[in-house]
Image 1 (cartoon, one colour):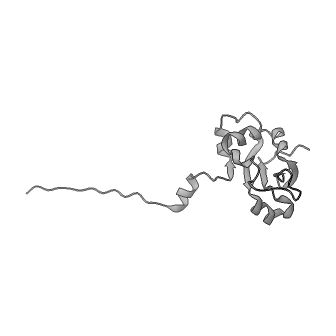
Image 2 (cartoon, one colour; image 1 turned 135 degrees about the vertical axis):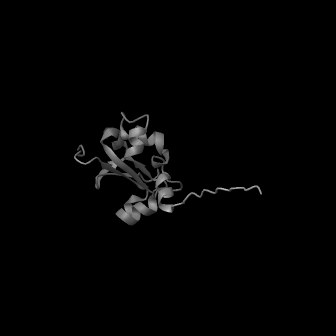
Length: 131
């Protein structure tokens, strides 16, 4: 009698691990920043490269007078720091994480004057925001 041995290997699928490996569309991690080609530039260049949608004005978002869309608000370490042009003054090496909040989430968290969304920059511990 000839014997046949069948070996079956199963890979355990762990949802938490799979989610951790998937990039979050609305977050840029320290690891992504350090591994980006723009790691020696300002954080604006990193965002343009990795998540350009952070910088695009929300679709259909207009001011009451029908003028330009409401600006996306910038927060650095939890402090309101103006608009997105302030990103060019923050070096990528100083950033731990960047998160984007769409208009709905930004308004829920910060109020109705955030209809253009928000970008939240968290600096590496020990780095102080520049005025």
